[in-house]
Amino acid sequence: MRFLQGFSLRRTKISDQILMWLVSPIIFPFITSILFGLIFGLMNAHLSQEELLQSFVQLEGVMTFIAFAGGLVLSVIIIYAKKIPLMNRKRLTRNEWTILPGLTGEDWKFLAWYVPVGYVLFNIGGSVLEYIVGDGQLVNQEAIEAMATDTPIWMLFITIVIAAPLVEEWLFRGIIFFRKEHNDVSWLTLIITSVLFGLVHVPTSIVAVYTYVGMGLLFGYAAKRTRSVEAAIFFHFINNFIGFLVLISL
Image (spheres, one colour):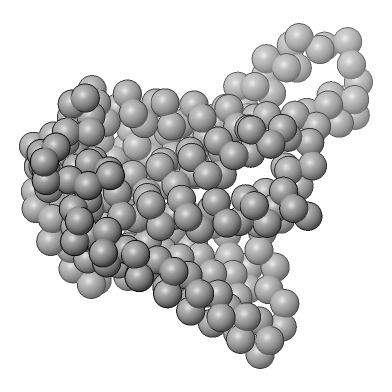
């Protein structure tokens, strides 16, 4: 499949960035919410404003799923149609990559220790910081927990574990991180994209800033070290999968 074989490296175009931002988890949910709200309102014009609002809130989980799943599908279409070099940027052949296109055996040796060690140390640091400054409110996490109450588990899994890591990493560690015609990324780019990643998750406390900017740094370094978006996607997937297991066990 050409999508996984990778496209020729080139500098990211402004039009590529605009399209990827439009289908990102930052903008696309607003677009789908507005469209869904208009359609839902027209189809249920007989309901009062209060009844409409109540019914709309109950469908929040479904709308989030549609936004993320739809954003994922549109992202794949855009990447393929525009030939954006996000996947397998090293242009590895089938004999060169291991398990996933874009990652070599050496990359997996690095990820085998970096992911568990980074995850554990990151969470220890978060616990220590939370103990020092007090409980930090994670707005993004609260929204996910609220969504979980009225959303089927399979929708949650696709949204949290599959769609979010792919779409977010294609944007932050892909279209922004690897925006030039080579795979070398500066430390300044790593820091800037990590801060941007943290900001779009709406941090409202020191703990929240540490959590989201820290995750951006962890995912970003994985991409920088392996020179691949796939490494960041994998780490993001593991992080969200663990969070998903914790969420459904509550």
